[in-house]
Length: 490
Image 1: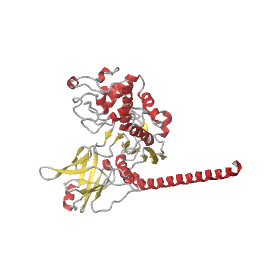
Image 2: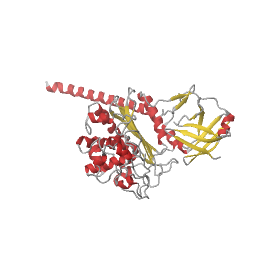
Image 3: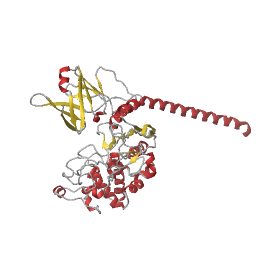
Image 4: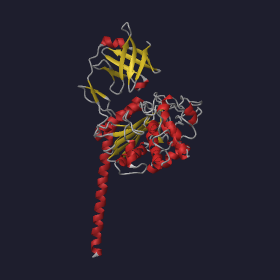
């Protein structure tokens, strides 16, 4: 009987295997189609009401924006669904970007640092609340009238409510000496930033502070008696399987590292800057590794994982401060959003990055570029991803544009000086254009909004023109997360 039925058993197994292979092939084909729609469906920030939405191709936008390389990882249903690299890790050598190419994560270093700090809290090595000076050993935060009223805590350092100055850091080129962390905290040469101090009453204002994370870095190394890269590797990176990540760039990784690129498309001299402010800015990683980090937070918040933090501590990480929708190391979507999530962006010399996720849906994306023009490209790609995956965020905004006024546009034309960059405004009959490095370097059309401001289709900036007492245009005001004013010089 065994001999008679054995061939039929083998045949059934073969059929099942062939069926599984066919299903796998169909899944791969469907995923490739989905990826292709994203690659060919980049979307502008704005569409003018009444005009058709015109998708853009990824390769064309990378060329137009002078972004040499891009790496993407997509999270779906709580898993890393796909990852791909595009373009070049270095514009001169033409080394291709792969999924293993390391980029500087810049400020996405902060949430990874925060996770390690909270792990030390759970271990009892650090206190989340209470005076950090009671735990700092190798340096003390100078006291003043503010700290006399309210002490600085680790919680305040992690959620930017400690009243600490120094927003961010420039890093150090290959030709420059790199200061110690204590030199950075003291603003002592060769440090190129000011001393890190308490400049506002703790817990009274939200103020983004890389300086605060530098204090946290010292606090963590004092408590663990380990170097910061070693501490991060042991407490977070290894536990999450982030094998392509490090808070320093080992020599044997340099061939796999993407060079940073300036707005003109040329590599940063020396390829990249170095950041002794490691907690704030020095993580080298890949989007796939960042996806592992985000997935762990998603799973832990749902009590499905505790590789680094307990679910209770993860939920504290995702709890906003009373001053802003920012938790312990992460920006948070408003609690009213049914798809509330967390994320962080990054901006180092020559790099722009983004990690954005939805906590409860198991969706998200990590995108890393090696260009100072990368932010615009990232937003365009995110809008394509949002369209494909049905996200509630990153939607195209529809605006109404006024008809062009040739005489008005002629009065606006000229050259303006904005944050050290020339901004050229040109008028051609009833159409107005802007050309400036901060907007990608290529000429873009400006459209007149109903409120008197001007907008572009592929940039989030809003422009206004100011007039002097004689009614002549004297300045250009640019609003994009902040306000910059450029004087008219020609």
